[in-house]
Length: 432
Ligand code: 4AD
Ligand code: MG
Image 1 (cartoon, rainbow, N blue to C red):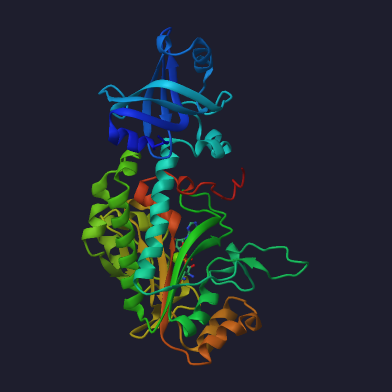
Image 2 (tube, protein in one colour):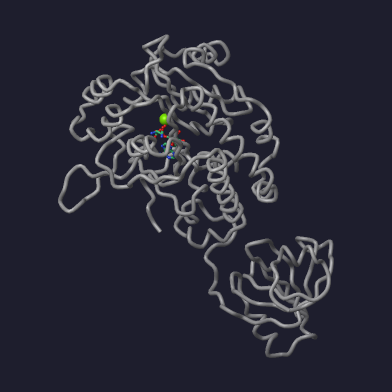
């Protein structure tokens, strides 16, 4: 006989089994010790009866504390009162690693749990989130590869900005100036479409965000794609298909985890079933005015409040296009029919989870790009490698970036983005 998982033991329901894991809960009387054992798959109640085991073992068992690691051998039987419907009567128990008194008990403050993140990862909540996170990452790779994309990597040490200088992290680099952590792969991805045409990545991005919001991290995981020959509609189509695929996968594989998190499945179902509503920025302002009583001056970027009000009107992400040129990045192409706006798109999550995807069709005109970089005060010479993409066989192309923790936060219905990643980094939190 060998070890089986707790999930397998629950399915088996009766007969002999051998399990290993950690003590999730324990209590005892004179005659019994109840241990709820957990492993990565589930939890199961185990009972040790004093009369059935040697005194020496009983003495050990009584001392066992929460989070000790043990192996048990015994007999399974169904029991309605047990937390997962099956109980093991233990015949043999081996203590693998004893545990000191575990610092995390019920009702700890958010800060305490953050300081003890390395231990809090073992909680049912974090375990459920990390399983969903694993499914999300797997689904992103599957989807892009299924659509014929190559996986491609940009450097993390970079010499240019792409999403504005104010959120760049400067890195000390052998005494050199002008080395930054990646905000995005984009300027190093565009050169590669000439070789691979359809590429994607899943990689960390870094933003020196001073905002202490529930949706900003300084280090986050970024799923990005870039396609040659892709026009604006193609970029939007790929974004919508990606979100639908990932959510569908989570609904198929992670119902139990969503249930542990108390997440209602019908918040996610419409995303798979319905097409996402599309609107231009200008139309969005009109909707905000008519339905939300918010009067925003044309040309102002949508702030969190406005995104939240707008998203509250729908049960799927919404697709907002044609933003004013001046609120968007230098590389976005002007809309041919309205040059005050660009072919840039944001996918805004339901329930106030903010921008999930930001993307665009890329500007083809090299002079336009140079002018806009100069307006931003950039040194053009640093961008020569990027400008070469427009000099040697340029083709229409576009791409987007999706914030994976934003997506996970929304899928799981989390209060803060910090719970969507094992060790969150923010302006105020970089330890442990
Ligand atoms: O909209 P952003 O800045 O777009 C880009 O970086 C493009 N260069 C992507 C591309 O076209 N290849 O960022 C993309 C997404 C946002 O929509 C958001 O979901 C996420 O990245 N994001 C963050 N997530 C967590 N914390 C932060 N500080 C984030 N900043 C952006
Ligand atoms: Mg954006």
